Length: 233
Image: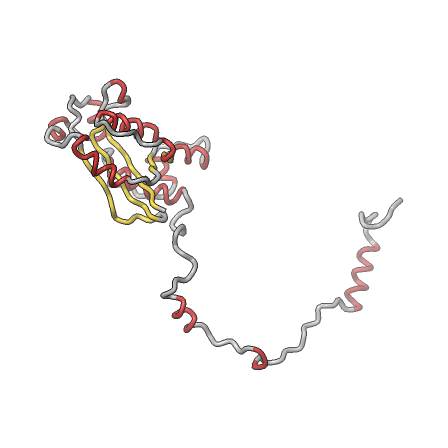
């Protein structure tokens, strides 16, 4: 099963009021394992960068001014996403910005049925607790010491680790059934077991209660006060 973990950085909170996508980072998982395949891009937002947003992710308009427009990289992004489920933290926010940019580029929106939100997952798993990415990384013991500011690819990497833990941990996808290549080795390593008439004869073990056991049981039952299995009427 192929899944894409992704995160975005933006100029603000609402694409409907002119805020734009400035960075996207995507991590590929197959059977809940990172494959090493990623997609990462910065985009020129064609507008200013509010100071509050820059304080969060550190991306200035000077840095972004020579970066490509979203429409320039849209084909590369869509090819990487394919038709895989898309996992994000507070996914409606990220889907909203990506779909707004797709609309500007004249492309169909991402199907919301592909969306998997780890915030919603966390609310079900840990009701009443904090559900920020930082708080959940702390809960699951995921090292985030290198996270000084938000970054789309860095946050996607942290989220990939978190998603794996929230969906069962590293044991998922380990393949407990022996593969065709390992089965002969395992069979060769197993000790030979005698079959049929080669097995040594063993006397059956006694499982019946002895007379002394039965007598002790009868004495115990006689001392019970109106046991339910006797007719007390």
